[in-house]
Amino acid sequence: MKKEIIDKLDEITKLIDNDKELIEYKKIKEKILKDEELLNKISKLKTIDSYSDEYVRLKKEILANKNYLKYIELEKKLFFDIKDLNNELNKLLEKRGCIWK
Image (cartoon, rainbow, N blue to C red):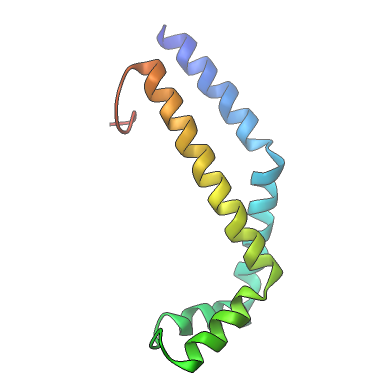
């Protein structure tokens, strides 16, 4: 049984690594990490009052960035995909919580 689970996990890992949304997510993340202007805006946003006009202006500028919006969209989707995958693994292993503990 343990060998079957490991083989299935390896199969799932290969599928995930070749997933076009995950590949796109990684590419967009790299673009964002190279965009100093966007990173500065995000960093500055964390330090100012969330009720100020400057905060609203910066937030709008950040959300106008197409790469950032796509990144957030893919991040949410991947989060729920991982959550579903964990739930399925927990059912198969008849275990709750993190299976790596």
